[in-house]
Image 1 (cartoon, one colour):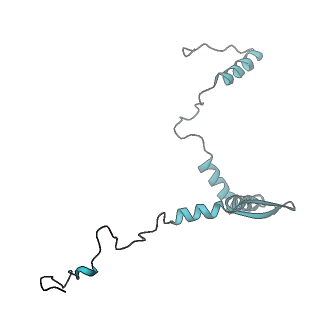
Image 2 (cartoon, helix red, strand yellow):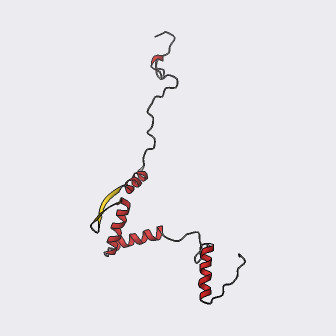
Image 3 (cartoon, helix red, strand yellow):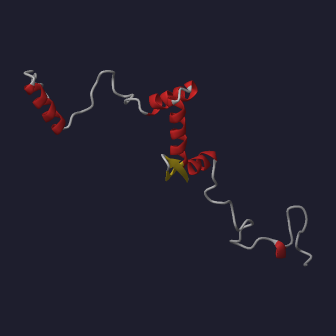
Length: 131
């Protein structure tokens, strides 16, 4: 150790300092650390084996949970029925952007089918400006 080297609080000896480009934590923070949502999704997507009608099948845990709730709802469990109806209303409701009573845009094939149906029932279709 030389006399001109300061050693003390926050001044470690030169030989024990980090070298240029060397990290104090070489492994660093683990990449892709999982949170609760990631773990839940991974768990729900795992496959399990169930017996359905005496036939063994492999389905996801998510699907197994839905099947179990539906079976309970069919058996008359009011809570399970409410849960299924809640899921249906939340996940299968029509587009929120569309005003009530509006229809989605028709494809040309859909329009041809509709025109044929109306013509077969003797209903005259009003011509619109869109055509």
